[in-house]
Length: 201
Picture 1: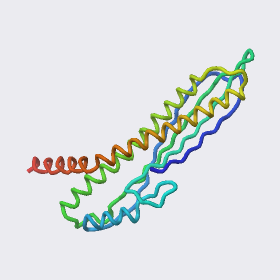
Picture 2: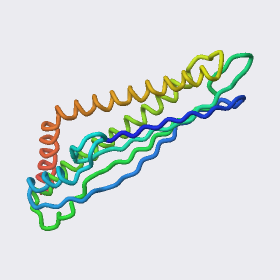
Picture 3: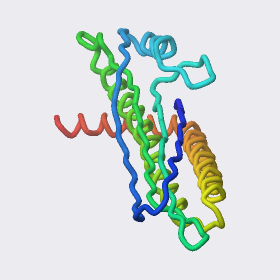
Picture 4: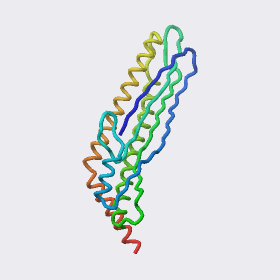
């Protein structure tokens, strides 16, 4: 997973209270070729996307960019949060097998199981990011009033940083669980596909 973070703060006074989370998602693909499982594995290792700060290749990735704006209401010597907008954009990067034509049914079945698991994994990364964007919006909106808008802005910045840190922890926890269960998950997917084919006969 590749993580890109941005969170901007805008300041204004006497604004109506409002809150909003805007989530968007896009997809991109990289091509691999091969006629055997070993060849496909090598292609994924050679052509897959890299993570931020690492040269290691992955079979899929999710780029995540957070953004946001907050405005403030100053009244009777106190300042509180007015409008809150948190944005999150996720770009899911997936493999596409370009030489599937002519491949064996067994290899096609293995690829279908693997590629569906890669997509499910990356979609979950995107879902975690969207959930955390909503949690950040709620946390910022619930912050207590401060004596000045400068102090309020600092509190919002601190809460935003905590939200990003919590997001990173959740993503890392998900990856750890997925890595432990990968082999069992793939065997289950393959068995389901084998049983499904047997039922069609």
